[in-house]
Length: 470
Image 1 (cartoon, rainbow, N blue to C red):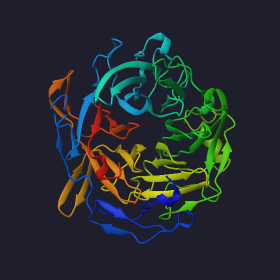
Image 2: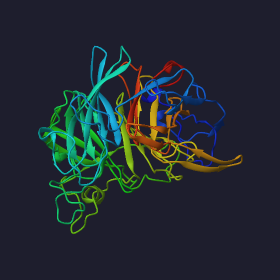
Image 3: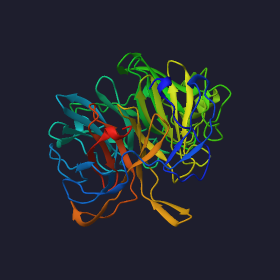
């Protein structure tokens, strides 16, 4: 989004319970905090209601009127390659679009000492159960076609990101490994990024120069092939990988950490609408150093950057490239520790706090995110069940999807409503506290794909997107 089009809100107030908050900023390059206004404006998509899944008939989601969805790839369901769908569905993105047929790569955030779910050709560590599956969806027919294992032998594949050359970068959110001090022990070290193509033949070779740390997600600048990486820890940095050869990450490159001069910590106490310029990037001399010496603290890369003035955030998770900017979120950032949304404008070399949640009622712990073709941001919550005392009594919120508009309004779009009384593939129970993951749009903007991590299934949502910003 160009700066002239972006007028996002930036709020540090607390305890606001309105469905929408608006704040007008001045010129982007000289933005200052404006008057925070409460608004009773409801979502343009309308209120949520229990909506039945086309395939199971169960009201698994709360959606606005006019929207429909179908589920696919439930944990344990057979895939086209004869294997069963792994559990713990997480980050996901469309990596190929040919004649209306979309191929998604889906992460599975599995850990422990369990066997790989892929064959040996596509397995990195035989004693690691994480990885990816590729899912094919026919946009014209409006139905899922098939799925298959594409990479395994990894650990806690949380998120990742799509590349401009049609692959998926899957990230390990851990630094466990074969070291004697590691618990549990695996055949190989972990904490890496791997690349998976659309044809499902994932390369089980880590791209080690991209760093070994507690990865979350990535996004790629299509003009330069620079990869921006987030780190999911209470102390975390924003990283940039500059490949030696454009589009060929396995040929190595340079890893760097963001430094905002004069601002070593942006995890809290940030002025509403703050814009920082003259950004710098400090080199990580040893990107393979997972821990500081004689520890298992997973801070080897982070500490290197901090010693050179790198800026600290609080749990960086989702990140998405759109129109010259990187939009990313800090899950526990802000004074309410309920989340921040940032914009890194690459050309202008500025960092802008575009939104800070004033309370968990408004937005609680943003995670995976994506920008729609209309310029709105879809945001997944990773918060479990949120219980808040209101004047009307105790209110419970189950994990939600939110829409953040270019005009600076945040709206509720969906809520988890997954209760299964009669077993599906042996699955039964109340899963309304499970997080949303992997939200992303089809290239034509007609379909929103997402996951409910537990019990583990993928959804394709469609409806009157034109009513709002998504």
